[in-house]
Image (cartoon, rainbow, N blue to C red):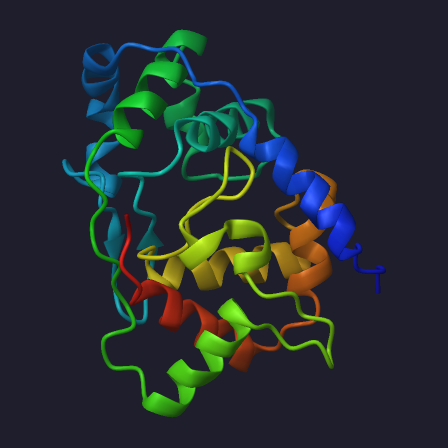
Length: 212
């Protein structure tokens, strides 16, 4: 098990992320290039959540720099996504910037998947997201993802209002090491300490929070 980075190191990483320059692109061109994204991410960028099945993330309202980094990483192979790779490979460098800027300016939509969650499960999820579990050295989500988990810069995306299934899938990917394109491997250090109960609870709670 890897040693968790200190709160000071987390703060340094946060500061670096929040200082990212604005992404340059053409929103109109991004809308046109996003035509290939609609089947999974919908015309409003809200994605989809199928209970008990797959979940495609909400892109609307996410940070443009974060979206661009994910597209760039998928194209470079540093983030593995068999579903996304063929579509990303169709985009030029400028189109990736345009698409990212386009989705970042769409109104954020509500997350799905947590509608039937019970009070006890939601309370556990809220604790992990806002306070953490320091006995197991699980840092709260808000430590990096910002107040109300609304995201900070290109490295820490908004979690509030994201679909529960997608959040859970990504936590499992960080935990298993099949996803590792985060700064300083912060997510591995946290996700490896979470069990399935933790993953489910925090995903359900975050999906029910308002996205801004």
